[in-house]
Image (cartoon, rainbow, N blue to C red; front, side):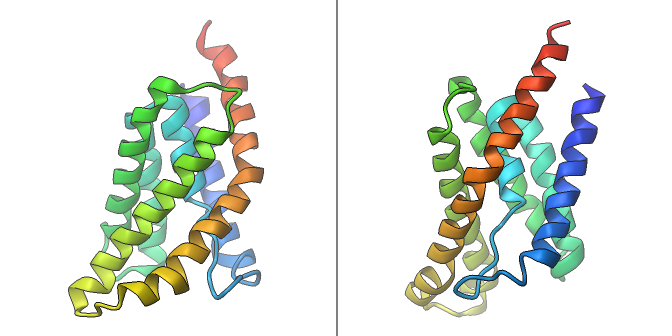
Length: 167
């Protein structure tokens, strides 16, 4: 459905703008929440791996254009997250808010692990314990706390668009 796709793109752009502007002022423990992870996991969980991959690719490209000197690396990382999370679609229940939050936390941890491998480990910076406690855990916690608020909105939107899918 084209309208659903347009709504997801608008949400991704809005969350990207919030992440790169507003939430930089609200950094806790030196980290900013990964707001783009929330729609990637939400779309993948509610719509499946293909839609999750598309949402992840678009989200990653936005980050690539802003922060990365390697075009496509963030798009690849978000795409992988969307693909893997999409397989949980088989157990999707619109009344369950626990599993999506767990999926967001696992996805954020996996994303940060890939980030560490690509940007630190391959450059010879092997202090994983420091990165884990200084960046990964605070970012996962901060993203999960924000996702508790935002996932409900994404789920309500999915329920709304589901009514039109059946017709």
